[in-house]
Each structure stands twice: as C-alpha cells, then as structure tokens.
Amino acid sequence: MSNGSPGAPVVHGFPHLDTVRSAITALYRRLSPDGVHTYGTSLAPSDAAFSDGDDLHLGAQRVARAVVQHLRLPDARMIVSFRTMEHAASVELTAGPEYFIELNDRFRTHRRDVGAALAHEITHVLLHRLGLEFPGTRSNEILTDTVTAYLGAGWLLLDAFREDATSRQKLGYLTPEEFGYVLAKRALAFDEDPSPWFTSPQAYTAYTKGRAQALRDLRRPPLTAAGWAGRRRYAKDRRYAQDHPGTAADPGLGYAFETGGQGLRVSFPCPTCHQRIRLPVRGRVVARCGLCRTRLECDT
Image 1: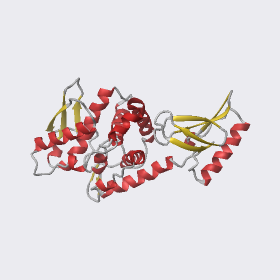
Image 2: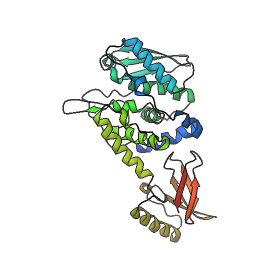
Image 3: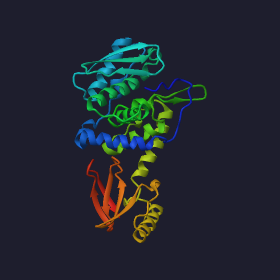
Image 4: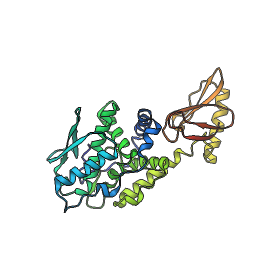
C-alpha cells in the first residue's frame, strides 16, 4: 500500500480515471450485479473506530474482523502487527485461512487511520480469493483502491486524507478526487450518502469534486440527460458518421459510431459500470446494460 507519508506532495485530479473505470467493470463482471449489491451498506464508522485508549493489538484485531465481515470473507483470520517499514502496510497473500498484515509503526499513534490501512490490505485478500487482478503493480493497486471504495470500506481511505499549511497525508494510490469519484459512483448505485462520515474537511471537498465528475457520466450523449451542447455535438458527429462511414470518433467524447450490415450503430460506456453498450441509431430508446442491468434512456 502506498505510504502517503506525512509531508509528501499529494497528486490531485483524475490521472487514473481510465483504470478506475476498468476496475469497476471488472468488479461487476467478476461478482455479477447481484454479488455487487450484497455490499449495499457501507462499513459503519463505529466498526472502524479505534481510539488511543484502546489496546493496540486487540483494537487492530477488532477492526480487522469488522472489515473481514463487511467484505464477506469466509474463514479469514487476520494477524495484525506493527513494524518500521517504507510503505503504509502490507499483507502476505497465502492460501489462508490466516493472513498476516503488517502496519507501519506510525499507526501506533495514528490510530484513527488504522481502519483505512486494514480496509485496503484486506481487500487485497478478497481480490486474491476472487482471482481478480490487473497486470502491473500500480494498476493492481488502483484496482484494490477502487474495489475497497466501491464495496463500502474505502470511504475510510478518503477520510485519511488531510492537507494543511504544515502537513499532508494520503493513503492509497488513487488521488483524493478519484476516491471521491468512486464513492460517488457507489452512492448513485446504492442510494447511500457517505459525506456525513467524513471527519476530514479535505476529504469532503475531494468527495464533492469526485461527485461532480461522476454526475457528468450521467449526462453524456446519447443519454437523454445530456445537456444541450452535448446533444448538439452528438447530432453533428452522427451526421458526419452517416456521410463518412468508418471515420474514427474523438475518444474523448466517449461515444463512437460503427457502420455494419445493420446500419449505423453507436457505442458508449454505461454510466454505472462502464461496460460499452451498442445500440442502433434510430432515435429515442430505453436500453438496459447487459452487465449491471442499469436502465438507460437514450436518444441515439
């Protein structure tokens, strides 16, 4: 897990957005919509609470058990220890049933963030058991952050983000705004608002920025909720595609036109799971995503 050492510069914005969206798609493919929806309630703040008055090891074990139960990991016993290390935390991925998690010594005195570090590492165990991984360490860590947030434990990782004039801290590989984006995607899918749980003002700000980006996903053509400018650009691109078959579209637009034996078709990402959807160009239609089953009102 990325160290996010206090004082280290914090990257902002959405540099990993494509990988984040691919991670959400992969999660729906691996678990199915019904499987994803078994995580409809987030980990409660009380389950992750860990005060300076708690016994260090017993408290860490208690929070670890709560995360294990939340992530529905069967028979997974986490042994938590603390040591001096470069990164924030690490986990030994074995066949189980015991897993060994090591946390950076600084969490001895930063106990409010122990739950965040454990959530990330225990999600590694979940992904290991599911056989779900991305190639390359960085992409795989982004997958882990994304799944942690989307399955209801990753709000802790965003809440661990703090930045002021004299210090800064961030856990995980996603930027604060990307964590906010994934949490907002989850909030839209499950009708759950995580914002009251944030104790960090910077976390709340990042969440609002991520939520704005997530809402833009719902307003991109050919969805009928697209704004006037987007609809006008889409109509212009559609006319051009009809007159110039085989012309590649601007990838930044999200949608693309394809010409085949059945006439002109448009493909675009589902705003929920980002699986690409293909529809014939024939005006207003109500479609359903074949992966996450989201109902989509479109004007193709």
